[in-house]
Length: 323
Ligand code: AKB
Image (cartoon, helix red, strand yellow):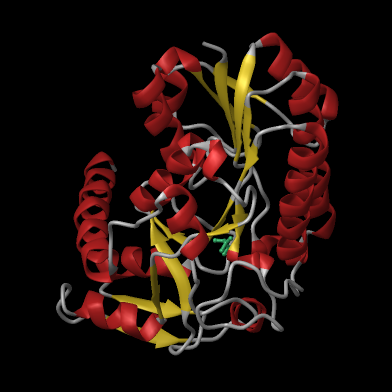
């Protein structure tokens, strides 16, 4: 088979997507491609691993050509909060990098390109509750603008160039393996670290800030299910809403308190991230994904919190022992 390549392999989603794809297709068939974020040893040891700078079109072209790549999961992206203070970097990676991947996909006759979008593709003018799949998209962040660019460009390459491009608007992703650090929804991961390490957490969003979220196993399932969906059923391509859970910091803190006695949260609002969160949906209408490729999440807030506390607890205990 032609190889599968994952950009952003060392990132929050990439670090769990690569093992899942290797399990499914065989380790030798899935290339982990990283750049600045150091790649975990187990990922490097378990299968092919390369460095790609997506902002360098020639590097992308060469990598796809030399490794006989047939499918790319393009996960590398500068996330919302970091992008606001690093405009140049956000533009190079999220806009130029995405364009380089699309062009290399055409030149190398790729079978499929997966381009994740985000809830950031919506903005303050979008209806916030049960946000429809088709609605006003006028994002107020650089990251969101780049995600709308990705959705539109992806659809253009489907329509005009016959490339099989697919993408979904991911909510905040919660996971225990790799901690995210550059986004707006990161509090929903950091709060678990706070609960386990210190029994307390200082949250940078207001307690009533409702956002759509998803546990990592559902995220991996969504990406892989969309990639395998029967193309003849798809009316959309790069812009599927995918809902799972939706909660506020206060609600998440309440659930964790029920499982970690004595856990407490204080709030010190960061205006940058609060402003971004306020411009995003509260919840998503994902009927299109459910109808066109049978999307259905498995985790709710309670089962996600149980699994997070168990796995993160084991991971942090192991790190303590290693010190
Ligand atoms: C972020 O917070 O920037 C990301 C996202 C919702 O796309 N997690």
